[in-house]
Length: 77
Image (cartoon, rainbow, N blue to C red; front, side, top):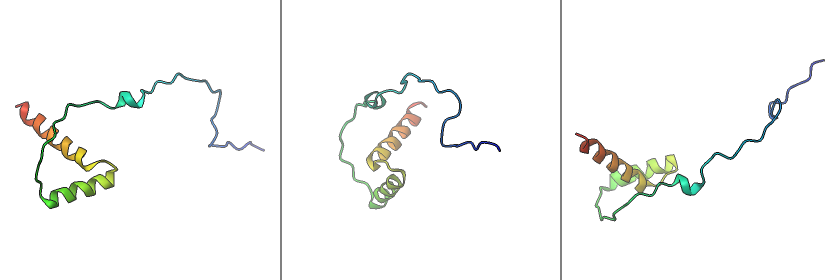
C-alpha cells in the first residue's frame, strides 16, 4: 500500500533562510507633494472612488498617479 502525500505539508528537508524582505518603512517611498485645491466633475470623482473601492486603494492616490504619469509622458517630448 502506498503512502498518501499530504500536500499541505512541506516535502523534503527544510532549511531556514535569512529574512530578505525590506521593512514596511523601506517600502514607502516618500514623495514631495504640494497641496492644491482642484474642482473636479462629480462623475470623475465617482469614477475614481468606484475604481479605488474595487482595487482597495485610495482614490486620491489614483488621481495623483494619473496626473503624474500624464506630466511625465508630456515632459519627455
